[in-house]
Length: 301
Image 1: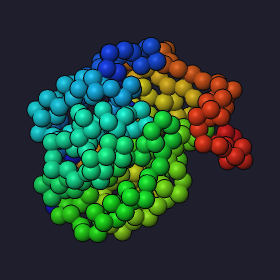
Image 2 (image 1 turned 90 degrees about the vertical axis):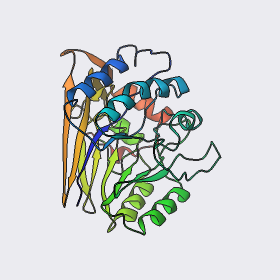
Image 3 (image 1 turned 120 degrees about the vertical axis):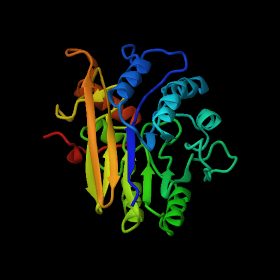
Image 4 (image 1 turned 30 degrees about the horizontal axis):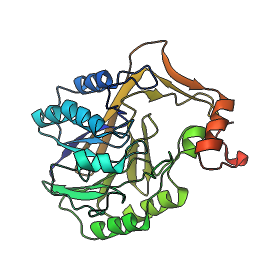
């Protein structure tokens, strides 16, 4: 079997005007540093698994592709993008097509710009499926029946080497109450796992949580890339939410029956926190923007 090496990035949060994320983070510089960290390697794919943009403008997507596409091409890689909750479907499509603009993608959504952005493309015997878990105007995610049927029909025929699925909201639980309230719908996450169970899917690549997680579900690794724009604090009080001024990504290698995930996280300023929300602030955000959470299901000890 031919091997596959993927640079998995997520949550770049570029703004069209080059503004700083949370007024602190230079997102262009963070991406440059992340790419430099693995610049000595060659890749088959560079995947950005959602929240490509912060403001959903065409300018933000162009700014990102200006930074990323030449770097990837110099290393022999095709670039793949997925929609995240901060992305806008019309602007995303205008610049990035179905998420695989340099491949012969087959868009689920046809010409309706309000439909989810989903595509499938083949490369050297590998199949890449991009799904859209975003819901316009909110932070949490779901998958429409149309997309799930699209995935079922696509996976009905195995690819030569296997399939990679890219979806922003992971079908695994978060580490904190806030992000769990902004997670993928539980039923959709379970159905996604049921669809890929027993198929040729080798890995599911996700983002949204801004921290590295790899969890095996139904024998398939679901791997979440740390954020390029910041890295969430994983082991604080789950009722609070904080992120450090750093960047990260993962190198995913599929070789025969093996899937290897090597994440990297680099802190830029030892004492700088991009944001910290205490439990009261988190509760307010969940009430205003998240799905209702039963207190008995809180992740807090």
